[in-house]
Image (tube, rainbow, N blue to C red; front, side, top):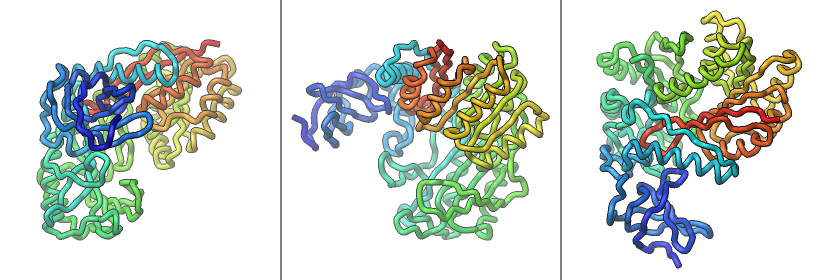
Length: 453
């Protein structure tokens, strides 16, 4: 019988779906973060539920052959990475295994999973840095939240970020302390400085200071310090007065004359604005999108419906291989960006629709089928972590003209649930995991499905 506070010796048997190691006591799974299959450890039991327990790693008695010494001094403290104690090749194997097991367990589909496509860089790969402001010993700090808490662990570097992160942290902390700008307190809702968000675009930076009010007068010294090191940066204040977890609002005050940065995506030229979404690992995003393009090129000018299309980069880049592309996105600004991208690139066969996919997608599928009898329709799905609504799955099943589906997922559990529904009418051709987020348990997955009836 397990009790909270017990310290017990465990042998970790396998890898869990969210990055933890798992062992079994009397057939009850015990989850322990920062462990690896083959580790012999001492753990302290911290959570006991009816069907599982959780423990905290206290000592490694005998390390797993998979285990390495994490290169980051903040590992296990900051709540960011959770696989840095496992060598990279085995991270890829474990992610493939995790994805395969999740799909088999939830969907009851026994489909082959391809090897996990690696990132060319497994450190310093991110193009986006985001951190909350905090206070420690009366000094302003930037850091990451400790796992499962709102306690900020101060950092001076992050091995997932490019080298510029060290300069940005130093300049920002020094400026905020010198100007004596109060840091926002989540409990009292008082204070000004909330977050910093930095994005790299074509070797240039967009730097966003998130604050509860316009601090432009105090930020001139900050702008000067940043531009001395990174002269072509876009710098702005994002004013967010709302309580809650949303980091950015739609209200921006720019400190620089430039308000966006030019970029190129498979021949599509666009300007990335501070609030636009972009995958954090450009290298892996390119690999995944190239696989999608190769798939589309096998067809004779199909009609492509791109659901959850964001700013329309994929929609626009596929237009040259399609008779028509239709993007559907709920965020109004993203749709405006998509229309602008299409117009600036002279794309005439692309349409962007603003609305909730749960409502708009079934209508769009039916209308496209009616207006294009006999024409191949390919559906691309890239939903948020919660996956697809059941009515969307049913609409897809009901539309006999959709022979091919390309499903991009960031959540293996909801992907597996949706595949179980779609499997009524679609066979899985391929499941390919992409390591968009090395050193963490997260994985991006590309699934290709073909209609079977």
